[in-house]
Length: 113
Length: 113
Image 1 (cartoon, rainbow over the protein chains, first blue to last red):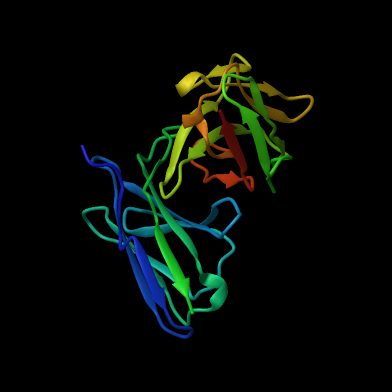
Image 2: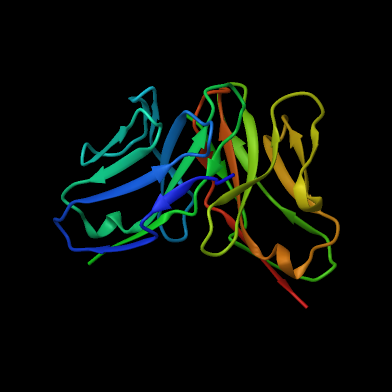
């Protein structure tokens, strides 16, 4: 049974460009969360999607947006990239039950030059 | 608001020695506590979690942690480490069963022969 799958694994973009990252949740999971992990830091919550709607959002600007599809997969979009957006972006999936726990993907390493 | 402090950025230890990784949290409400491990170029894997009940929690790979409400701590311990335990360890907190996670900055455990 595949876990959480993220694509691409690595990406290099130029300042000002836009990027889309993709996530397929673990089979049976219906909730997807995105985290940003800067170098030397812990992951920071960006937002969470459930039933194709953004349910919670962390302290990130509107340049960060997302989408969840009917098959529960999700995309993270970042517009007007800044050098500071360089990070590992982690997707985590779960069931919409309390304390169920998250399964994390291996992440997408985004480098902005 | 919640926060997590991991007091040590790096902990070097020899193989077969015991280790303790420290974690302190702050929260104005009841908390649920987690330890995750991240191996190089991989996502996060759950080691253990405290939701309620016994304050001593046992996890995978021989790790355990103790919840201390009066000291607001959740330190991770292992009586005898292996080379394969070399990884980054993250402590995290959430304030409800559905809530997202707030992570510490991580502690790099370096196990040498």
